[in-house]
Length: 195
Image 1: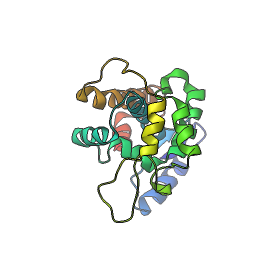
Image 2: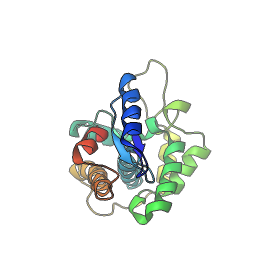
Image 3: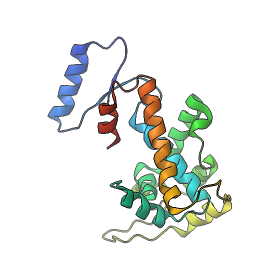
C-alpha cells in the first residue's frame, strides 16, 4: 500500500509506486486513515473470526471452511500468521478510531493469549502448535482453555455457511466503507488489495 494524502503530488506517488513495482510487489495507492485499507479489512474479518471461536467454532473447521470458500489461508491460521500480539494492538487502535464496528471477540482473549506467550507462528504457539517439518498442526490446548473461559452462546447464525459469511461480510462491508471514505480511489484497487 502506498499511502497518499491531499498533499501528495502525482510525481511522488508515481515514484513510490515505481519503487514497489521494481521490488516485485503488487502495489495499490490508498488514502491516509487509521489502518489504511488492508489492515482495516483484515481486522474486521479477524475480529469476527475471534468472535466465532469464542462462540465455540472449531479453529480447524474455520480453516477448512474459509479455504473452501476461496481464501488462500484458513481464517484461524491467518490469526496466527498475523500474530496474536499484533492483532490485539490493531483491534484496540481501530476500535478507538471507529468504535463498535471493530468489536468482535472479547479483546481480553487476545490479551490472555499474548500474556501466556502465544503470539502465533512466530513464537511456535498460537491457536496452533508449530513444530518444524510438521504439516498437520495440532490445536494448542491452552488456547482452547482460554477460549472456553470466554465462551459465549452463538449470537444467531451459526451454520457452516454462516461461519464463512459472517467474517466475509464484515470484510466486504469494511472495503465498501473504505471506498466511501476515499481510502480507496476505485473498486479495482480494493479488489487488488483484498487478494
